[in-house]
Image (cartoon, helix red, strand yellow):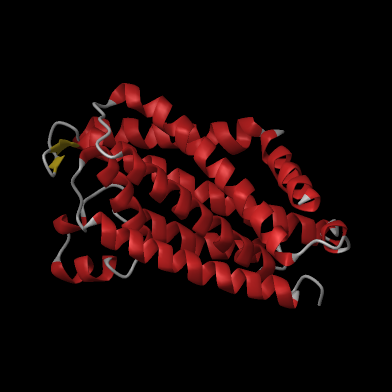
Length: 250
């Protein structure tokens, strides 16, 4: 456990030392999204009887939680591999499960910190209510942990920053931007509604939003089942890669 807490503390310090960039910048980005889209559409659009600005806030919060959890673990691993400092993590007799837990927990901490910052910055511009806080916390924690584990896979697989950027631009960005952050999927044509149901991020956004307004496109219990199953699958894959030392020890 000493090794686990030491690695976790190191990962916390890694992003907290540059909090202006790792926490402040994503909050500003989300605020700009809200001001632009909210200003243009708030008077013209309602979703499930909710004003558009209010509808948008939970989506922006969850999007930043996911993207920053992914960014934390993936960037940490790729930097450690390129600089060679990964050897200082691999040499100690640290179980691969502790390795996994420390990175995912630190990624989750950054994601939740950014999410809280986005919520505090945007709540002044929208009428918000909280119907089911436990659903909010559950989806934020499991979703952030899932993307933290996914970030580890990206960091392990990538051998240079270009590969990591491709992983983020061609997988993470489309999954989050096309997940219902800015719209309800029932405003889409039938074909794209069907496609959206194959996007696991849609269930994270939809379930998280349910905690605020008590309305959703899909039953939150079903969304939670999908998200948890994805978390288990991605975690098992990540643990397997760490156990084998793929692209880390070989």
